[in-house]
Length: 184
Ligand SMILES: Nc1ncnc2c1ncn2[C@@H]1O[C@H](COP(=O)(O)OP(=O)(O)O)[C@@H](O)[C@H]1O
Ligand SMILES: [Mg+2]
Image 1: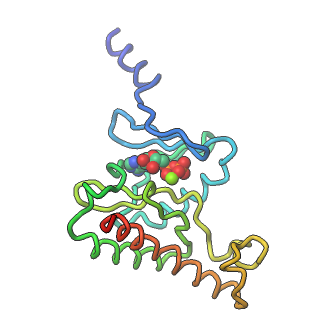
Image 2 (image 1 turned 60 degrees about the vertical axis):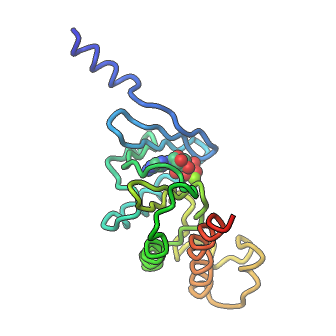
């Protein structure tokens, strides 16, 4: 009976909500992992995040996928610690940042949402999370000026060159954010 009750508890709600936004709800599970559930309006972001995390699965610095439920738009992934702050910034952050940018630059997508709230730190290691807004080199975004912000639309170059320009700018943001943090 006790076992059954324990089991029911696990099946019911062994999770603590740590975030509720427009794109997702995020839970810390009793097993120590994170569950990200995409909201109905943002279901389109689920396959994007899944694909990017899979592509990054052999690298440190990113959450590892534990399991996915495509019908519920849920990804269970490893816990990457607390959001980055001045207090938990690792001493060797410059080395880590250069490695992270190098890895991201090798991918066929742009992490276009590198902001403080999408950077975590666990055991002195930096993690980049939240890949739902990433853009792939084949996305219409790079061939259709109307979809682009003014600063990108003004370049009269091929979609592939736009992709490179956009990628460099977005990924450099990681260093900018941390420099802002340390000089604040
Ligand atoms: N793997 C993770 N490890 C630790 N915290 C996480 C993880 N994934 C999400 N979070 C927490 O949940 C918040 C929202 O997650 P995020 O993936 O950025 O969702 P959204 O796409 O809605 O912005 C993050 O700012 C972070 O605090
Ligand atoms: Mg986010």
